[in-house]
Image (cartoon, rainbow, N blue to C red; front, top):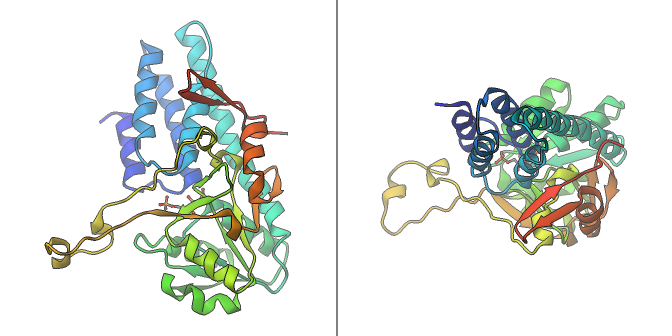
Length: 313
Ligand SMILES: O=C(COP(=O)(O)O)[C@H](O)[C@H](O)COP(=O)(O)O
């Protein structure tokens, strides 16, 4: 099995998961693959990037990462390789620095003595929580289990190992516990042009319960989680995964039973107080500006979109 196929399967099986990690891993994989390509550089890289792109459909971070890395330039294969490697390294640095900045900005919104609820396992959301803790704030976290893949266990372990008190709850207990919560912080797989959030299934129910209880709902999202394609009218595809992730046993084979397993859901912008990005804390209504002015996009023949972010400053 070649390097690309192996990497694609790691993303599909969720051995590598989470929007930021997937994007970083894709950039890293393309960089390593580029080093090994001997001939036909453009064609080889195009095929490799297509395979990686088709692994998980919802997180736009994967699309943005691949698009960024694949916007290499140069005349000879050697020049192209160098350009691609440089772009991959830039993207990886973008991932690492953005998470850190988001942590610093978001932590200011977490008060001393707060109970913070989070869902799934988001490196950006955890960066916010850890920064607040590092600042000496006395905080407690309520983490959802995040059925069916239980990413909440990862969150619980990571935060507890960091020294933070964590209460693990089942997803259906979110509303029951909301009265104890001061702020919700979740991550993002995609932010659309109209400021909607696509994140782990169950996120929108948490947002609903938070709104009812007047608990602020914050999203931690790097700007590469914003979707340029939605500016051109495209809808975000919600990944539906194998039913066997939900149950096994005889119910699966029952002719009258259907098991559905959408991995993500959509939270409309009206439920979101703030999106914490590396360029600042913004209202969801600003998504259009982030896509147009910060990410920047170019359209070729109505098909392709290339990012040209000025993201370091
Ligand atoms: O929904 C998930 C992960 O879903 P899955 O486990 O299905 O990939 C995370 O909340 C976002 O990807 C953000 O994570 P991060 O902030 O680390 O990018």
